[in-house]
Structures are given as structure tokens and as C-alpha cells.
Length: 428
Ligand code: LLP
Image (cartoon, rainbow, N blue to C red; front, side, top):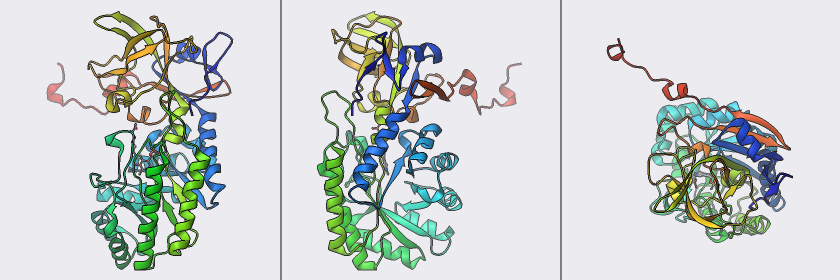
């Protein structure tokens, strides 16, 4: 999954055919650079692998990974649906042109007005709890088609915070109460048509995923037997990982697809579940390796340790500080240089945890160099903030060397947007 590193005749890093150093010079840093074709290739590889094994297959791209409108347009063109977790994501998906029927809203701890917004938008609603079901029943039209998120008691993920199945998880209805909540939904006048689970994020090992598929299918089977519900779709969530270190191996997607669909089909016939749509909700797999964060080195400090200080911080890109995530770093001017020295790459936020790399073997780095932080396409801009009163960066989309600014860099006025100072506090 590590894209092959491409260079031009100057030896500079190429992203989607564009020179990374020139991008940094022209559009400023920090800058997110999104490679359009990489997103399309990732989507197509995944879609081909699964639909080749089971034709009734649908992707619901988990847009929390990257909600840039251009990214969402690309995926709409490719035929994806959207996994939305908030009214804001529903709104963004509608603005990106997704048909409401292609948007599955999986909210957690949702307010009544948010449920109303989902109903008014005409999106599909995936119910997370009995409380949500009861509150939805007060406002839903008769016969509303819904699904349930079930916690299959299997969890996995690259970090404790990213495991969403199992007894510690706040998500979904308990597997043992599943038949009862489906029955309850029918009694309340709903038409349940789907079942869903998402066990966690950043999974490179097919085993826990297989176990989740098996468990969810057994739950679906029990629900069908107990209530007669006919499933139109069964959704196994997202979670497919990508390699972040050069040593990690990518998922063998064809093998993964064949194992999962094999098990899925066996279970369909075991329980007489017909031929429902099989759905997946990948976020990271689709966009993770399709972006780079470009940031310029402004300070080389030989202190108690050696630091390369850059003009991005954890406000720009949170994953390393939040999860201790490894992100490979290249020097955009000389991406093929061999590592020669250990150092830390530190951001510009006033906290010691603001590091993009600790004790990392890196090639020679000089002040003024542009660093390209790899695999910054998922949970990157979408988790950025204005902490330390730093405007958010710009995003550009590249394809065959053509560059489009798909998000303007914020300015100081964005830092003040929406704030009001009471008249009594105004400076006279
Ligand atoms: N479906 C649901 C219901 C989800 O909650 C998620 C992610 C996905 C699908 C997509 O998961 P993916 O295919 O991207 O692994 N901020 C963390 C990841 C949090 C994931 C939250 N839910 C990170 O940077 O690693």
C-alpha cells in the first residue's frame, strides 16, 4: 500500500504528477496534498475484490476520515455511498451530491433534533440503542425502514481508542438483546431491514474481522429466526488497515474479500437469509495513503537531543500526538536519500507532545527543506483544529500534474469568526 515513491528529473518528490517542493512554494505550508487517482484506485481495488465474489456489494465510504467535498465528489462518481455519523456529515454528503438513500446515518448518543434532521433528509437511519429507537418512534413516519448497530463482542484496532466492539465499547445494542430490539422495532411500527457492526479501525489482520463477520451473521440468523425479519443489507462496518511503516504488509484484498464473502455466503444459506446487499464502510483504506502533509523545516536545534522544527503542529495533524501513530517522513527535495541520523521532528504547538517523530532515523535535513508526511489522508485534516490560534491549512487536489485548491487556507479572521464581544467590554 505504500505508494511507490516517484521523483522528477530534479529528484523532487512527485505526488499525482506534481512536484511537492513546487507545491509547497506556490501554495505555502503546511499543505495537504490529495492524490485523486490514488483514491480512485483504492476504491476500485476494494470494490472489484468484493463484487467479484458477491455481486450485491456496496461501499459506504466513512467520510469522517476525510470530508473534503472534492474527495466526496470523487467517491460519489465512483458509485460509493456514505457512512455519516452526524447531521454535519449528512449535510456535507448531500451537498456533495449523494442520494439520501445512499447515506447511512450511524449516530451515537444522538439528540432528538438530530434524529429529526435525519428523517427530514431522507437518509437511512442505523439505530444504536433502545433509547434512540424509542425517541425515534415518537417522530418517525409509520413503516420507517431502519437498521440496528449491534456490538458483536468482538473488537480490534490499532489503538485502544479505536476499538469499537466488546464489553468496554459504548457502541451498538448488545448482541443478546438483538432479537428483542428488532421485535420491539416492529411493534413500534418500524420496518427493520438491515443489521450493522463496526468493530474498530486500523485492522491489518483478517482474523478478528472474520470473527466479527461470523458473529454478526449468527446474530442476523437468530434475529431472522426469532422475528422473521428479511435483511436487505448486512453491513460489516469499516476498519481495513493500511501499512504505516515500511515493514508492514498491506492487506491482500483479494484474499480478504474471498475469505469474508465465502463465510458470508455460507452463513446466508445456513440461516436462509436470501441475498441481501453486503456492505462495508471503509474510510482509511480508501483515502489513507492518498494524501501527504507538506510542512517546512524552519529550525534545526541541537539541544539535549536533535530537533527538526516544522511549521505544522498537532493542530494540523493529530494522529502522532493522539495515538503515538507512526507516519513515514520524506524530505521532499531528496525523497530517496538514505537515513543518516536520529532526530525528533517537532511541531510548532506549545506542548511537548507535539512531535511527528521521536528518535527517527532520517536523512540529512536542513532549514528550509520541505518534509512530506506520508499516509495523511485519513483522520488528518478532519481532526485538525485551530489550537494555539493557528488557522487551518489549505488542501490541494492533484491529478496528472494538474493542481486545484480544494480548500482555502484559513486566515486570522477565521479565528474570530462567530465571536461577539458584549458592548460593555468593547474598548472605548
Ligand atoms: N464505520 C463506523 C461506524 C466507524 O465508526 C468508522 C470509524 C468507520 C466505519 C471507518 O473506519 P476505517 O475504515 O477508517 O478504519 N481517528 C482514528 C480512527 C477512528 C475511527 C472511527 N470510526 C485514527 O486516526 O486512527
